[in-house]
Amino acid sequence: MKGFPVGFSRDTYKLIIQNPEIWRKLGNTLWIVIVGTLLNVITTVMVAYPLSRDEMPFKRGLMRKLAE
Image 1 (spheres, rainbow, N blue to C red):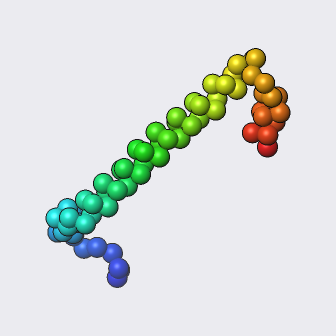
Image 2: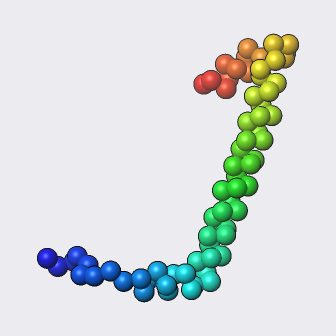
Image 3: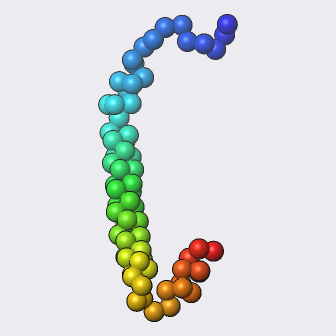
């Protein structure tokens, strides 16, 4: 059948690993994921903690707005 590989070769993987641009892009991706996750967790905690307190003013209306 045409289109199927005949054997296994690591040549392509060697070319990818040797390319410095791939490492820069991987670093950018990791930076975005780590910083984005940290910002998301911090924002979620800053919003969730006050909403967990019974004495927070306007809690009921704010919870309704967030649940929409």
